[in-house]
Image 1 (cartoon, rainbow, N blue to C red):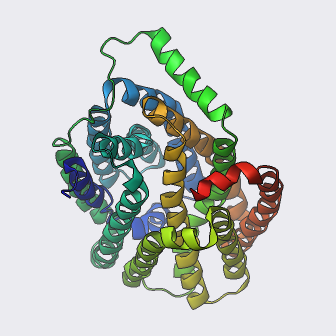
Image 2: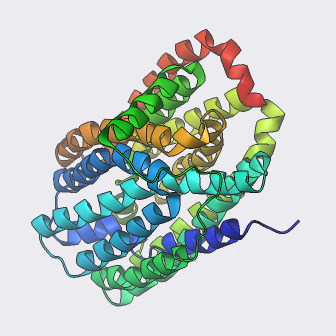
Amino acid sequence: MKKPDNIFKFYVFTFLRNFELVMPVLVLFYLDNNLTYANIFFLQAWFTLIIMIFEIPSGALSDFFGRKKTLLISGFIHAFACWIYSISKSFGMFLVCETFWGISAAFASGTLQAFVYDSLKDYKRENEAKQVFAKVQTISLLSKAVSAVIGAYIASIYSYRFVFFLTTFSFLAAFITSLFFNEPKCLQTVKRVTLRDYIKQIKDGLNILRGSSILIFLTVESTIINTCIALSFWFFQPLLQSRGLAIANFGLVIAMFNIFSASGVILAPKCEKMIGAQKTILFSELFPTIFMIVVGIWINLYVAIIGFIIIHGINMIRMALFNDYFNRYIDTQQRATVLSLISFLGSLSYAILGPIVGKITDYTGLDVILTGIGVVTGILIIMLGFMRQRLSQDLQSLNA
């Protein structure tokens, strides 16, 4: 059967949007511009705050005005923010860049998933959602792997700033690709929107979220675990550099991480069928936690490389699985709104904890803080176990 037109275009769009040459040296770029870890985490908290402000409104607007228009706005701002970054040198200008980047991310959050799922629904192929989301995640990871190798090599020859400038062009190409999207027909677009309609859309989304024990568990679990793993991400570039890894080789490490993640995303649905969704989720919590502690305690370059690959590789696998879990329990008319609400909670958690972790890092160092995050995550997993046990009957439906 012929692949849905939107889905093929979205694959191309995904590759271009994730061709981020700057990612393997982003933290090093910050440090090279004399930022402290407190500064870096404040930037990320600010970025997250911007997402929180626009997250829910963007989801509601996507449900009302359409996925394509929302993604077009996101794509243009994304490219613009990257270009501004390439010419900025001060903490204040970086805040401006993160503002635009956050707006772009907010408009994309929820809408990307909703666009794919609603496009599949047009073709009555919702049952393929898990496979399509897995392929989207795989393409994203492969794009990041290729761009990481190229970006790190360019940075080692020229400068961190130059790779920011080059990344702008891939983001522009993604924006141009989104111009050719078709709005999913299953979305009943409301032509005239009142403030009352808008508020009702958000309230209905909240009611859907509060009324489902499965959605509550998935939201709490993903918020806690994803936040802890995301906080650890900002330590690995300086950690690998401090343990002797050359800048030009950063791309190879990130490429290995993305290849591992892509393979895992493809195999995850099969693994889930073998051991069940609940055990899959549990293992996806335990492995990153264990390796955060190991990498923090064991001062060795190769241990750090393996730890980075496993911790953040498994997190990518989690994202593909949870995309399917969330979409399965949310109706089309509320999908972008509810997904934005869920993302909002994760953003809130990250915005609160990020600056605190950054400040502690400036005093304790990378190894201590990474070990500490691992220990705290382990304690939170134990607490999640009680919630999982209480909802064990309801969670059986995840295996469907």
